[in-house]
Each structure stands twice: as C-alpha cells, then as structure tokens.
Length: 94
Image 1 (cartoon, rainbow, N blue to C red):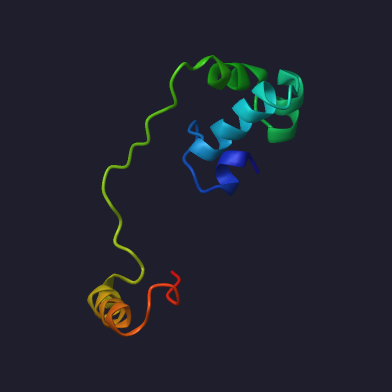
Image 2: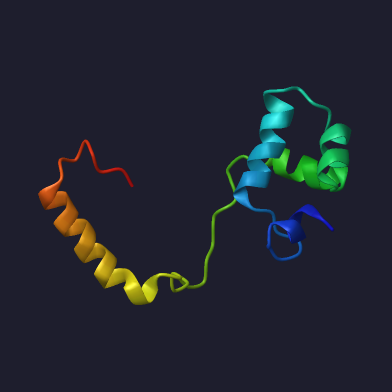
C-alpha cells in the first residue's frame, strides 16, 4: 500500500504534509534523495519534483464537505455562546 493510499488521497497527489516531510528531510536533515524515496516508497523523480518546486502546491478542494456534526452545529454554537457568558475564558478550552 502506497503512502497516498494510506492517507486517503487520490493517486498521483500528495497531501501538503507529505510534501513538507520531503522538503524537511532533505533541506533540514540533509537526508539523501534515494533515502527519502526508499522510506516514503516513491520514486526519486517524485522526490526531486517536490524539492524543485519554488512555491508550495496550492490546496484545492472542489466543495466544502458537510461536517459530521452538521446536524448539531446550531445547538453546539448555542451551548458555546452560553458557556462563554457564564464561565471565564481562562477556564474554557477548545
């Protein structure tokens, strides 16, 4: 199973976190391109491609998915609003 499949992404597309890992491992840790490719199970050309990018890949999402708590959104916002009024902010943590 490839790194893309374990992260739920579509084939040929890496998540921003993976690109950041590649860049960090090469530029900060000084790891070889072959070593990065071997551990992440991608080709050396893929590692080189992400290292040669001057600007990060833009994040694209076609539509905002409905949150799992979507049906309860209004109720939760109401509870939080009342909680903010009754409890000092130093006690409230989200």
